[in-house]
Image (cartoon, rainbow, N blue to C red; front, side):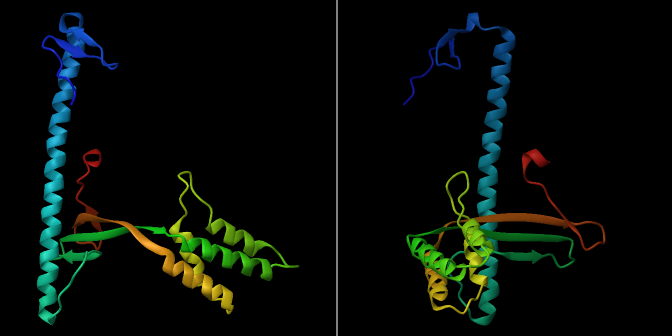
Length: 204
C-alpha cells in the first residue's frame, strides 16, 4: 500500500513531498481541477460499464425469449445481432469481435506449405512464394495476421500436401478472446441511413 501524503504536503511528479506553502496558487488550482475532472470521469466510466452490461444482458434475455418461440435453447456468447424499432427510427446492434491466435499446429502447416511452394516453383516464377511468405509476416508486436493466414484456405489446390496444410491451419486456430460491442443508431430523417448515438466522450 502507498503511504498517505502527510497533511500540508503534496507529492510532485518524482514522488518528492513539497509543502503546500511552496506551491503556487495557480498550480494548486490546476491540481484540484484535474483531480475533480478525473473523479467525475471515473464515475462516468463505471456508470457506462454498468449500463453496457445491463443493456447486453437485456438483449441476451430478449434473444432467449425469441428463441423460445421455436423451442430452441441458446447457449454460449450471443452476438452479431441487429434489433430495429417497430417504426424503424432506431437500431441497436450487438457485435462480437473475436481475436484469433494459432497453436503449434501453425508450424506444421507452414512446413507443408513451404514444401508445396518449393515443388511448385521449381523453374517457374516466384510470385506465389512471395504471396505465401507475406501471409506469414509478423507485425511490430510479433503477431501473425490470422486473416491473411486463414485467407490461404480459399485456394483450393488439388494437392494432397496442400490439403493437409489447410487442415492443420483450420485445427490450429483458436479464439484468444471475444469482445462484445454495443452500438445504438437513430435514423436520419426519412432516409435509409442511420447515424450512431455517440457514447464516446471524445466524439460527443
